[in-house]
Image (tube, rainbow, N blue to C red):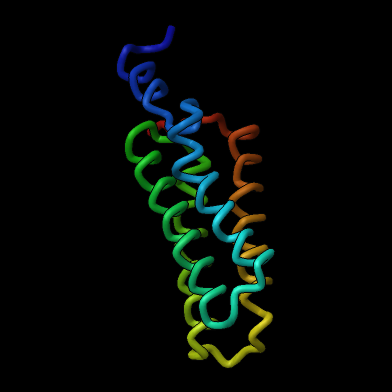
Amino acid sequence: MVSSERLRTRENDALKRPLTALAWWGLPLALGWSADILKVPRPAEPLVWSMALTWMGAGCALNARRCHRLHCYISAPVLFAGAAAVALIGLGLAPVAPQASGYVVDAALAAALLSFGAEAVFGKHFTR
């Protein structure tokens, strides 16, 4: 039997609400990919991706707090780290090639996507 507390936290899952999910994760992805497609010049393109990853990380952090979704506990720090790395590369403060920002974005998004796999093993919601 599922307790009312656990049921209430699961109902707060932003990923279950299409408009909320679109605002937190769909819109930033669309903006980042638009910057890629439109060939926005450097350093603007990496900074657009940095803001997009930060926005998605914030959505995951809030969702982890609200509903204790395991994926969000994993992906929030991954997205924040990706955002910081892309910003450093975009601003020329990291000693790597400029195209490395694309690899960092890809790695952060892939890791966030792969974190759904943890839910298949450990369950969707973190429990103490």
